[in-house]
Image 1: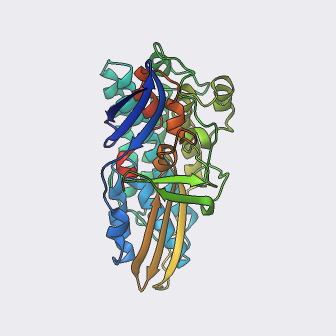
Image 2 (image 1 turned 90 degrees about the vertical axis):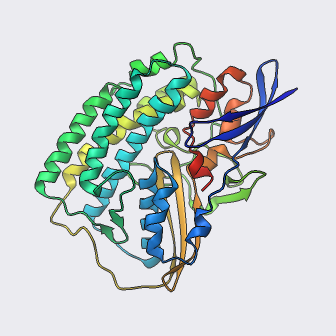
Length: 386
């Protein structure tokens, strides 16, 4: 058995893989992250509103998801309500962040592992510019806006703003059709697989959805999620003592088009990538429909009586999967904060007998596919080492 080490970079940081291989076939892979940031400890004894500024800085890609999860955890702790208007605006910006993440991941992270034509970078950037414009109208800027606060949102849109957003959403959908259409046809995806087998990277075939934002439906509860230390600087995450895959394939498996691909290729690399691309289309269609229900005469923010203590949990579907934030507040200060990241679910460092989703996907595959299979999970190193 030959043992080698490999650094995987361009994943919002880097990971170290210890690869056990024989005759070019991967027998097992151990996953390590050697950086540590200590965000949860940094929050302790700070005012609870400080978390709204600190937590979005956990990640440069899904910072908006962390802002939303933080606000919802505080609202849960202090028993706060929001209007339908605030909920829709949060949905729009959160959905757009997911779309932007998927496009960047596909063209900037995954595509270069197989395609050397860099013109696709410009294609991706031209599309995500429109997304940033829409989010900026609502949130003031992107990334790292702070317009979501406990009790609602800070923006108060005009009719002209709504017209601009609707027009931009429709233009964005036209751009998305150049990536993938309603029937699931994608020239760029097929080009990516010209020299890559579609049936490699099969994993655990176990899927978990915990968040209920946008149109996603949970199939589990956060109370069954446990974190365990491993021999690296991040924690394994199990659900009912088992490893699961979270993310676009898990939360869209009931979609007819995605399920057709799943029935043919199971939870292979092709199905995983297809689900993430097709989710872009599902989300933009959902947002175009949802904004029609927006009533700008409703309040953006509901004032609340000052409360100083409480405990709360929020669970949302972030770009990469289920994201959990837990907070305990005493005398307006944070006494405890815990975050469970989507990447922890599928990057956990299990054993050969009980591997995590990404480990299982690599086992039995040729060593030359290791970069592409590992990155097909849309890995975020900075989130893992939070």
